[in-house]
Length: 130
Image 1 (tube, helix red, strand yellow):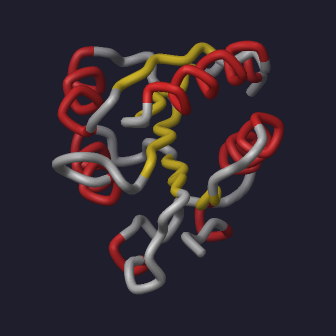
Image 2 (cartoon, helix red, strand yellow):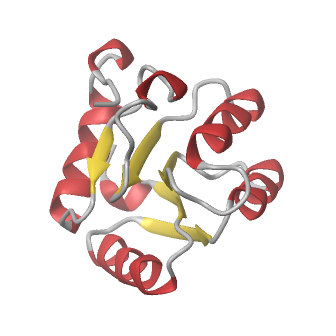
Image 3 (cartoon, helix red, strand yellow):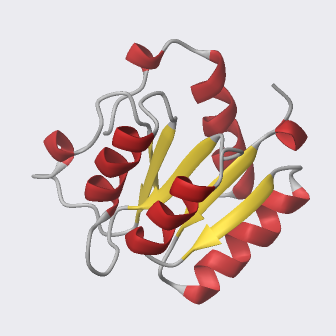
């Protein structure tokens, strides 16, 4: 699947980081929909059927990225998820989805695009939250 054919739901509470990622991922050929928290992301997932990948920060206000990913999978059991964080706590890996890769901040747009591409072209069992 080509990048231009993919719609990403980016969930990031930091407006500057969100803006930078939206611009960079759009420049890389993705269609990017943005949300600042889990509540807004779930509302988008409930009303849109064109979202191909959830790219979410773990540290969000309210429900965190782990909670969001589990709720998103209730709505869409096969939705690919990528976690991001600059403050990931080592005790938390078991809370995430076992098939969701993790990008440590800061990461490049190229690295994000590569991770998303690999996620969509490899068996789910090959991805783990690190």
